[in-house]
Length: 284
Ligand SMILES: Cc1cc2nc3c(=O)[nH]c(=O)nc-3n(C[C@H](O)[C@H](O)[C@H](O)COP(=O)(O)OP(=O)(O)OC[C@H]3O[C@@H](n4cnc5c(N)ncnc54)[C@H](O)[C@@H]3O)c2cc1C
Image (cartoon, rainbow, N blue to C red; front, side):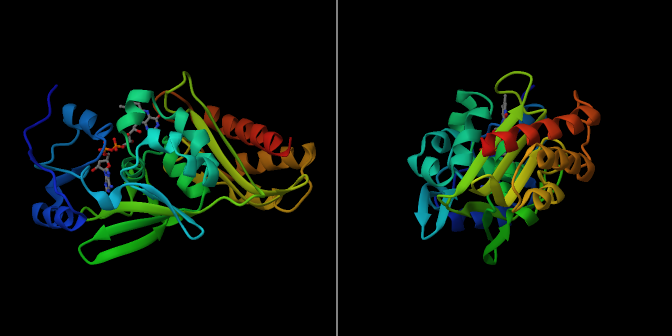
């Protein structure tokens, strides 16, 4: 199938893009890498009257360190994240996660901001942004606002972005020397969306983890933190008994939902498997 007819504009500045968005109303849609949107247009799941191509907006580009924060522009591609020295140094979780996103051709075009804005529960970047305590910087008709990743992902493919807003960038605390990271996902084939995945972040001293975040994705309507399991592990010497208790806790607190091919029971089992593997890896 082919997409329905639409108007097309390519603004050169954020202010121009926001003005276009305001004028065109809810019928307009932004396009970044197009790796999700083009498929939905061609399948006519979405029929916007106008596409606003944001790929010229300098304000949305680049990776930089500002004080103790790592800033990633919304237009940064998955490949740029995979290959960036700044990311490797200051957000190793993202470097570990990037190769799991689709295939090279898609990673070359798909963007950090497009993935966050789309809010796919099976996507890697929403989970990583939550695990790394990111803040979203959003431009709108009344200027800029900030919202934490915790409050950004609301429901299945639903974020707190309003139709007249543009995600500009995210900021997240840079990694500290005592922080450890683990990213893993279980998928049928490499490049497929995960059946279930996990991103773990913690401070490590000997065999004790603290300030833990255990974030799971592709199991619920949004990425989700296992707060009870986190609290259980936090600050205690990690041994087989504590890991088994954390696995039981995560299966109790998270209620997985089925997707088109995998049952809720499968996912419920896998979240425990992922947590056990991750904790053993972090402490090894
Ligand atoms: C075959 C295939 C396999 C894939 N596998 C994976 C995978 O394993 N994991 C994964 O995470 N993703 C996967 N993807 C999706 C891919 O990562 C996309 O690149 C990403 O989800 C969307 O980024 P994009 O830049 O292409 O956004 P687009 O397709 O251009 O836009 C997606 C949506 O976000 C909105 N949007 C884009 N940028 C902004 C912004 N700055 N502010 C506000 N709204 C914005 C658009 O209006 C649109 O609604 C796959 C895609 C394909 C085609």
